[in-house]
Structure formats: structure tokens, C-alpha cells
Image (tube, rainbow, N blue to C red; front, side):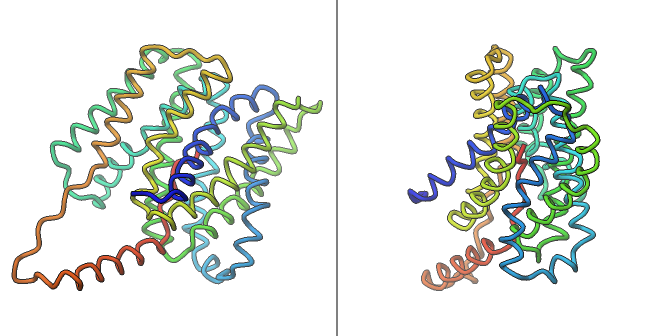
Length: 322
């Protein structure tokens, strides 16, 4: 059972990483894709980088700069630009639902790279159900500009699935705060030139400025801080359950604030993708320990508690932040 603080953090992160699609949709109405990515990464780095520097351990960052660059490319540099460009042609709710396929693709990648347990019938069923949901959602739009945009979102899904693999295999010693802060800083530097080159001729409207500020301060800086607190409070496994909630937030936000349609296809694909994700990422119950190795209950609880505590201090896989 989550504590009251755990529930508050869980609700916050579900919203903070469910509304970026809405804000991106509003922002790309008036400013370029590089400008959207630069504003988001620069504002996020402005908040997180001082916190990371103050906490020290900068030598760890220097030792891991190569995998950190790879993580940044897979999590931010490519995906945030592709996502922003795709929303020039797709609704925010549809984009959010397509991104919900990340856990499914993650399972496939883990299986292909030999870093996953053998898939049983339940998980195979989940993969097929989830992919069917993606097909139901994307199928009617596979024509013209929409097909290109869907391809862009699928590349984002691939990047969001690769980034956690890089983090867990190559960045285990790097604290999550440092990983996020320096990744955002690198991305902001990369997009500074393109943002200047595509700077808007006129001041964007207050609505667009609010969306850019919200993306940087709320959906990036505050969201990462809340995420780290949630992981510390409830652990990685329970904390990551929010990835099943934020697509619903994306749909509700798009329908409520942008008047996007809520069709039967969207509802059906939502149920298929989310249901498939839950099944595809389900873990088998561990086999019972042999009776010869059974320890007193007190010792078992002590070891379990120690393991859980150790697990919570490791670098958590970064979620698809949108």
C-alpha cells in the first residue's frame, strides 16, 4: 500500500508526463521544432544542473560521458524533435497513445539483445495485443503526411526503448539526477544553433509562451524531481506503473483543452495498447526456494529489506517522458 506522499507523487508524475503532448501541440503552432526542444531542455537544465553540481560526484559524469551522450541521443536529441514535428500533423491524444507502446517495444528489444527472461504465453499474448492496438490506432492514418508523422513517433518509441537499456547497462554508477541534468544540458547546447536560426520573427502569443515554459519547468525539471522522489518513496517497480496512466492523461487533456475527438477507435486502441503493455511486462513469480535453504523468517525479512533498499539507490531506468 502506498503512503499518502507516495500517492501524491504518483498522481503528480502521471499528470506531468501526460500533458507534454498537449503543450507540444500548442507550441508548434507558432514556433519551430528546434525552438520547442531548446526551450524545454534549456529550462530543464537551468533547474537541474545546479542541483547536480551541488551534490558533487562530477567525476562519475566524466567517466561515463560516452554512454551519457548515447543516452542523450536516444532519450532527448532525436525523440523530442521527432515528437514535436509529428504533432504538426497528429493530435496530441493520438501521439500520447502511440508512445504508450514503449513498454512493448522495450520487451522486444530486451529479448533480441538477450537481456530478458524467456517469454511465456502471457507475455507473448501481451505483445500481440499491444501491437494490434498500435495497428488499430495507426492503420486509418497510414497515408500522406500522417504516415510520415506516425513513422516519426515510432522512431521516438524506439529511442525511448533503447535509452533505458543504455542506462541500466552502461550508466548504473551515474546518479539519475546527474544523468538527467547533464543530458538536458548537452541537448540544449546542441539545439542552441538551430533555435537561433529559426527564431520567430514576432513574439509568440501568451498561450504558446505558457506552453514552452510549462514544458521546460513543469514537464521536465519538476517532473524529473518528482520522479526521483517517487522512486525513493515507493521503489522502481511500483513507481514505474505511472507509464500505464499518463497515456490516459494525454487523451483526456487533448479532448478537454484542444477539442480533439474521442472516437471508438481511440478507446479500443487505448484498451489494447495498455492491456498489452501490462501483460507483456508482467514478471513471473519466482520459483519457491528449496526447503533445505529455508532460513528463519526474521533473517529472510532482513535480507529482503536490505535488497529493496539497495535496489532503490541504483539508477532507475528513465521513463518515456514525452
